Image (tube, rainbow, N blue to C red; front, side):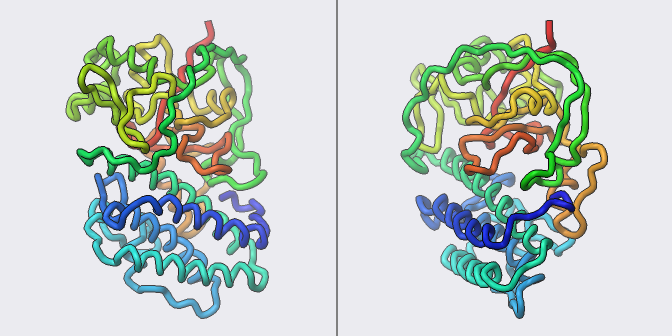
Length: 394
C-alpha cells in the first residue's frame, strides 16, 4: 500500500473482518473434505491451503506483531502456509500442497476460528496504530484475492473429473444476446494513470503519473464466445502467422484447439462451468484465454490488445472477465515496494508477466477498481480472463 494511505477506521475494519472471512467459508461450504484437499496442477492450490494461508497472513503479519501475548496456533504452520515470503522464512513447495493430507480440514477450520477470535479481540480492544490497521486492511483485500483464486482453482479441479460435477447450480442460465460491438474513439493526449490516493490500493497501482496516448479506438465490450468461436472454426489455432512465436510453440506443445474448458462432442461445442458442463453460451464473454490466445484473436480480428493505460483511460469498468492488455507487468515511474515482508507482495513479480484489467464474475463485490492491476504469465488459462479489442485510430 501507499505509505501515506490512511487505512479504514478500526471500527469499520472490525465490522468488515468477520464478513469477509465468512465469505471465504461460504465459498468452501459446497465442497467435500476430499475436494478441499486436492491440487489439480502446480499453479493451483487446494482449498484447504487457501483457507489456511489467508489465516496465516493475519497470524503472521498482525497477531504476532501487535497482539499481546499471542502464541502461534501451530508452530509448523509458519512453514506450511507461507506462500512466497522469503523474509518470513522457508516455504513448503508449492507444487506439493496437494500432498498435505495433514492438517485435516477440521484442524484448518479450527485454526481459522482461533485466529478470528484473537483478531476480534484485538480489533474490539484498545486503539491500534496506522501500521497495524493498514496490515489488517491489506489482509482483507488479500483474502478477497484468494476468494477469486478458490473459484478458479476449484473449477480447474472439477473439470478434470470425468463426472463433470457442478460446484453450484447458480449461474446456469444462459446469457442474454450480447449488445452489438461498437468502436469507441478516444482522443490522444496526456492521461493521468494510477491510483489517486483515495481509499485502498495495492502498491503496484501507484504512484499516479502521466502518460502520453495516441488517438485510439476500443471495443464497447469484451469479445463473446460466439465471436471467438468464429476464430476457432476458421482455423485460428492452425495459423502460425497469427501467433507470437512463443505462443505458437506453447499452443502446439499443449495441443490447444480452443479455450481451456471448451469441448467438442457429438457435433456441438460445450463448455465446463462452475455449474457443470453446458452448451457453449455464445452471448457470454469468452473466458479462460491465455495472453497468447487473446493476442492471436485480436490479430485475426484486424485489431490489437489495448495497453493497460488505454484500458484505464477508456474502459475503466469491470465485467465478467479480466481483460488482457499488451502491457508487460512492471513498475510505475517512482514505484517503491513497501518496507519489510509485505514488500514482497507485488514488486518481486514484475518480470515476464502481462497486465489484466477490470474484474471477473469471480471477483468479490467491492474489490475491483479502475486502477487495479492483475497479472499472470502469458500462458495462464485457468483464470477468468478474456479479451477486449482495440485499434489505432483511422
